[in-house]
Length: 153
Ligand SMILES: Nc1ncnc2c1ncn2[C@@H]1O[C@H](COP(=O)(O)OP(=O)(O)OP(=O)(O)O)[C@@H](O)[C@H]1O
Image 1 (cartoon, rainbow, N blue to C red):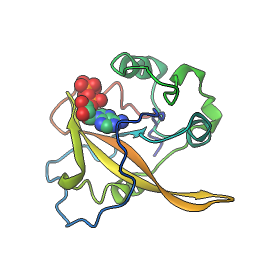
Image 2 (tube, rainbow, N blue to C red):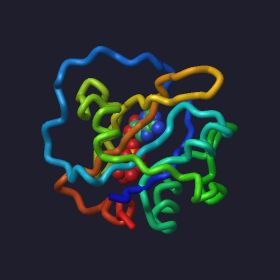
Image 3 (cartoon, rainbow, N blue to C red):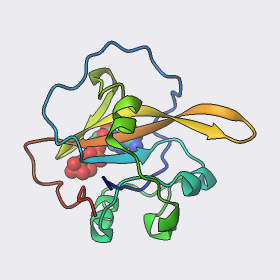
């Protein structure tokens, strides 16, 4: 499934170690295929390389961006990203990254979905692997506010 979103680099989270979590996953019934990923710890170069995720209409990205403060050199302006470098993530990848959407990793609640911290394994050619911290927004099953932003194309 082609679900897309772009990375936003941010420095709001500093912890990079992966926790040992109980299996206390979010038990509400979100529409599982509808996710949005935000990179929370990336250099501008990394962001371009890693530029992620889920397929969204440009207008929807703009809508999202209008709510995101653009400050600091680590932030990426989505319009400047090369779409060919966007990376797709499967639902399983994001589910694993967030430990099955563990409530212990809940970092925020938006108007139409919860936001979870997670980690993606990243292979770096010279420096070996690392766990890259990310934020994943999961559209809940009751709100239709976010449908346009999460539309798969
Ligand atoms: N990259 C991030 N790093 C850390 N926390 C984040 C990040 N993205 C979102 N959050 C947390 O999740 C909360 C909800 O984020 P979200 O983007 O959903 O907010 P919103 O724009 O108010 O919601 P919505 O877009 O659903 O109307 C934020 O207030 C923040 O606490």
